[in-house]
Image 1 (cartoon, helix red, strand yellow):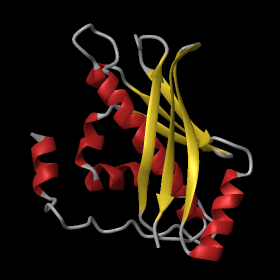
Image 2 (tube, one colour):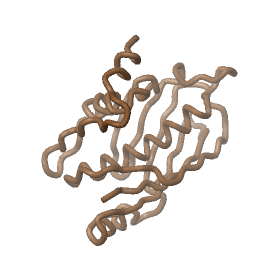
Image 3 (cartoon, helix red, strand yellow):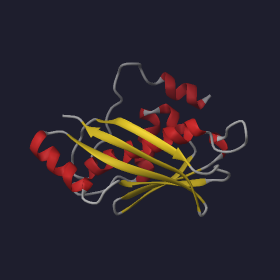
Image 4 (cartoon, one colour):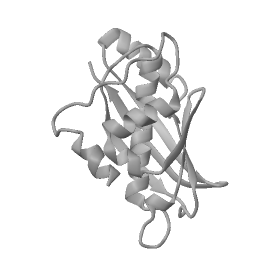
Length: 173
């Protein structure tokens, strides 16, 4: 099985090699980043991520529902929670990479509010929770060498908002 092979390539307690930074001021190519992410975090390969796109301060994923089903035939809350958490981690990591910074990012807090069942393929969007949050993170990194940002995630199934999530992501020294 492909997942077993991916997991066997990783050693517990050994960090996965970092992806080289894009050219100064450049963006990571979504397919290259997602390929690296699937090797760094093997479960990513089973999440159903079909497409990743950046638009200003928003990062979005298009996802397939089929690999994320629960026993009722709708989206499994645990899978959706993992996806929102990882999307915030990706937002923060890609934001840093665009600025030529290679740092570790961890989630400090995360919460979710389920509003409606997920019944078809869906889209997740991540953005700063407040205006000016990215600028404050840049200032923290300049002044302290570390920082924190609050991000908000939304899951849309068609025109229906099914899930709202939030998390605080910490950039370590």
